Image (tube, rainbow, N blue to C red):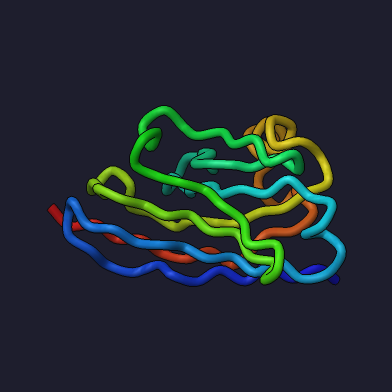
Length: 130
């Protein structure tokens, strides 16, 4: 059973920074596309940023230039550096991994929810105060 464990959430003031981390165990890490989703309460899981196996990255429009996704293969860890945070960035962030390409992960999540992906974490809460 693959396991995904997130950390790094917390409370910051607008303009602050946080770095989320996600450790992915098992074979999933080496063969997976990975990324971060944010749960919009009562609505949906919205993609934030993703990285494909070839290292190509993708960002939701509102976070481009402020967030950076990266991997440390030696630690099986995915990161999301979030800078210049705004209250609109708040929410529960979920790390997910899957053998399918990132754009497919986004599509599957939109249609069927994050549990349709191969591995996902329990979520980490980000609160941004104005």
